[in-house]
Image 1 (cartoon, rainbow, N blue to C red):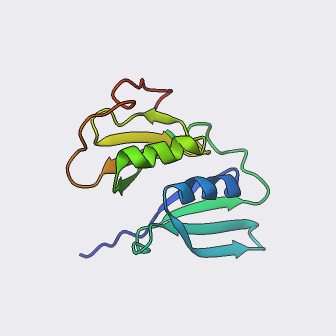
Image 2: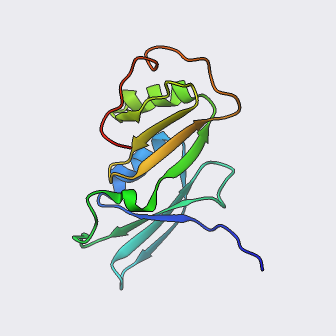
Length: 142
């Protein structure tokens, strides 16, 4: 029996804000489906060269009152990054809270505008522990 990964789907409240968040991570829109009859949009975003591993952003045009306030029930999305310190600084410079700083030079967690937990992992070996990350406390939950 064969199986193939397709995507991870997350519901979003503010499509533009959420797309901007994932763009900060380096993801690009790879495909879009708008359903006039169903009044929803599906936007697929993936890192360049990895279009077969997208996140599917599902946006209901008329709102989604049933959307949980904490989307943690599914776990998290995980992305490997070239330099975790540079990525975290880039995100902070753009208003993103680093919930679990990369104190170990290896792992950090942030949340999207829709409260989706995103794990960032250092590509290859961990970086040497460095400030301000070593002294930075956790913020909220991740």
